[in-house]
Amino acid sequence: MADIKYDIVKEIGVLSENAKGWTKELNLISWNERDPKYDIREWSPEHEKMGKGVTITAEELKKLKDLLNGMESGIDY
Amino acid sequence: MADIKYDIVKEIGVLSENAKGWTKELNLISWNERDPKYDIREWSPEHEKMGKGVTITAEELKKLKDLLNGMESGIDY
Image (tube, rainbow over all chains, first blue to last red; front, side):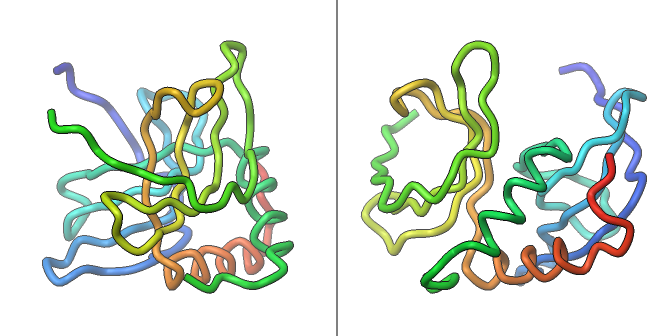
C-alpha cells in the first residue's frame, strides 16, 4: 500500500486510552496535503501508528453535535 | 473473513449522504450479540453493506460531546 501522507493540524481532544496506551482521539488532519478534515481514530503512543477511524467533515461534525445534544434519554449505554 | 453478526439497535441519526446514496450514520449497534455500542460508520442504502467506521463507548461519546460543545472557535473547517 502506498504511503499516506498526513499532518495532524490540531489535536482537539482524547476520548479514551486503552491498556496498551492507544488513544481514541478527535483531531483535525490534513491527508495527502489536502484541506484538513476532522477525524476520530485510534492512535498508538506518540501517534506512531494509526488504527481504524473515520474522517468527518465540518458539516457532519455539526450534525453530530446537534444529535448528541438532542439525545432525549441521554447517552446511556 | 468470518461473518460479523450485527444488529442495529437504534438509528440515532444521519450525518450525511453522498452521491451514491451511502450515508454516514450514528447508530447504536450490537456486534456479535454483545452489549450495544455507539457507532459512526458509512452504510449503503438499506444498510446492505457497511463501510469504514468506529465504535464508540458511552464514555467516549460523552467526552466527544463535551469536546464539541467546548470548541471555542467553533467547527470551522
